[in-house]
Image (cartoon, rainbow over all chains, first blue to last red; front, side):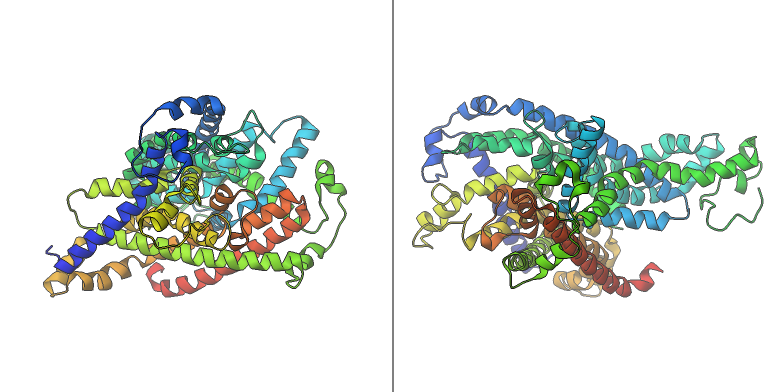
Length: 279
Length: 335
């Protein structure tokens, strides 16, 4: 398609400005993480005077970063796997069957998206404390409590997206499987799930990012031993100083796996959105 | 199996044995099959239902109950013994000439302004980027990946980086504004005082626009190329094609996208909390932080719950009105 000059110039200018807007903070993160402490304490410099990898060594001892990392990893991975498993069953039910209460279910689940997190933070906090007191199951301050909480955060969006995805898979496929002797679960796992892999990957990415980035519940529901990265990173700020070079180094270390994973899988997310949410 | 299936309980994707009697030659007794089919969808939904009940619905009902109680830190271990206070918490929250109500109203307006600006810019930038990148050009895939980085970054690392850039004496923002461009006579504060509102909006837009971009890109893929080709044959220029084909085709995506962005932004807690900590500056006192502070800093759970319920009612109202308005427009398309 022949585009007029005005369009091409608009494209060049707008996209360049956007690239700058996106990349400047990334550059600040990277360059500051390689500066000496005195350099990040003075006026900002675009070009660091001397590079050091010292911050990348110090981050592990200033705060127990590895420990926080493990906590975040355990919580996020468990929440993701459980959430996606639950979402697959629910989406299959909604996509393939008509039953009384189907509409009510989808509306209820979707409307939980609009609940302000703060609304159920207080009650959940009190419920967890009281469950701990009466049964001895420590949910408050434990990883389990956080996992259960997080797995419901991505659930509505995951179900929604997977229903769209499952709907786009021809029914004839799983009906044929049933004709060949599969039960409904056989049809789900042998036909629908393999055909919906891109959608399932997209939902996994979304669920993992939701859990990895959550701050509110992590700040209330964890204690010293279960603290996640979201809360732990604040440890680099002491009473008098903020070790900005270490903060940036730690931020980068924490971000790289998520960003790399996301960029590798992003085409699935686009595919998932196209089939699911957008339609 | 009889031809007249019971009206609502029969699965739409009927069992193969129903439609094709001889197929497969499955020898299952009829009634158990029917029963299993009736129970199956509920079985599939059961885990999701239990979890939603446990984490969302029960706490919500519980939160509504708490909002009618004078629940403070003294009653956490035995919340049932907290005294009933009736509508006191609500009355306190909506007395806008008293300190509590005044502060709530203020944070409500701040949140409205923040949400409108943030969602507006996210949508605008996302739309522009998606349309400008619809056609292939050199470096498009790489650029798309770069644009998604802010969305992929964990919220707190992104916001911490911006907080560093907004530092009054050591930050990049003041370095550029004051030292390099000489736009300001001194180095303004960004994380306290009136500027904090704008700092919050900028961070929120930076973090949020790629999601709009992602959704709109997905939406653009659904537009058949033939439409553009036909329009070009008829002599429509690029700008006209965007106005007449692209924008109308994106309407269904936009309806969902704007609602989702609105809800997420209005409830956003992460951005202000990482930027400002437990108490935000007056100009950037978003409602979620405000409620958090009333609940966990001053330990007045009853009052915090009442504010949460009011917030939820407001969001329900806006969503209902929005859905009514948009569903009327697309009414016959759905039917």
